[in-house]
Image (tube, rainbow, N blue to C red; front, side):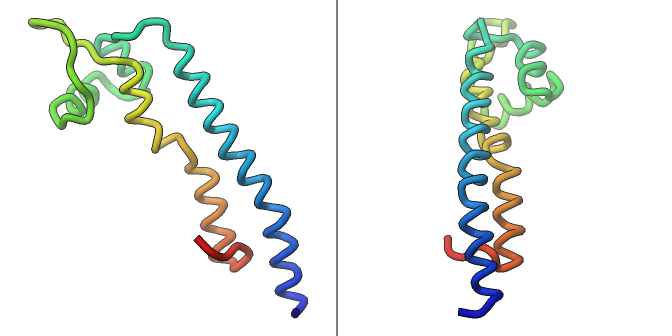
Amino acid sequence: MSIDDAVRRAVAEAVAPILDELRSTTAALRHAARGQVEREYLDTDEAAELARVTPATIREWLKQGRLRRYGSGRRLLVRASEIHELLAPEIADPIADAVEAELRSMRVLRGK
């Protein structure tokens, strides 16, 4: 085994638990964020605030079918849990994924 291989292996072994912890922390943050919502149904302004987008974006997501509309008549409501599900991929692991991709490009991590 070359020195380069030994260093890569040592770094990979050191980084793997850090990536796991980062992914675990983001999952815990998502779970905590879900618990912060007291109401199940939100109007477009509340949903936009929760998602950190504009009310127009919420309406566009409804039009695209990314969110389901609740309420009757002119009353437009969305479920807070559906906002979280929609955003989960965006907040799930972008940092961990970026770190992992960089380590793979440096040939520190292999596989997957």
